[in-house]
Image 1: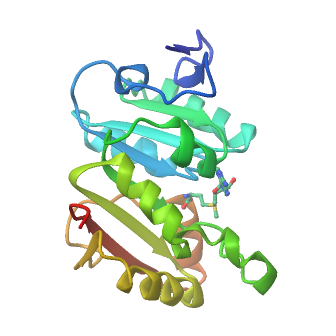
Image 2: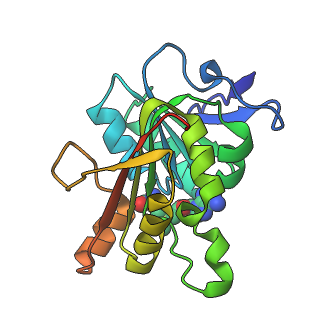
Length: 206
Ligand SMILES: C[S@@+](CC[C@H](N)C(=O)[O-])C[C@H]1O[C@@H](n2cnc3c(N)ncnc32)[C@H](O)[C@@H]1O
């Protein structure tokens, strides 16, 4: 059972038990699809998606308190009953805390690129164990959407994905479907950088 903190942070989730997986109903009431945004930052993407899709729920995971509080403020100001945010490291959330099979989509947008060789293990999209954990959080047929401006990170993620038999790549051009811009995406596009996109569909485990 998890508590939702009372005002002024009604959108923040604090589990009573950090050592058991949450249940779907601990995140949101009802059966509406739930989308997960890993490393959600200040929550601009979450808030834009939540107001565009009031019939879907959006859960952000972010480790920095200041950014979590910005998500809270945006949710209160926008009256977004379909947003929640969890302050925790995403490795822990994905591996140990979030319910299995709960997410219709997982968004992993503009993560830190960790360019130094000694930090390679922090490039989560290049780790097969991380992909396997994301796979276990998705509903059947669910989607994982990854976007980065960092070409080496993207190419490495692509190579790992090509060796993975439990996700299939699908086409994804910017205007294929409504997809809100994130804060970092806007900043990087304004600097003239290019975004690389990877859209993966969950396959049944062989
Ligand atoms: C470059 S920012 C991108 C934020 C947002 N997705 C966007 O596109 O505007 C990366 C975010 O991921 C968060 N982050 C990085 N590593 C994390 C981790 N292990 N667990 C949770 N959040 C993390 C950072 O604090 C930061 O807010």
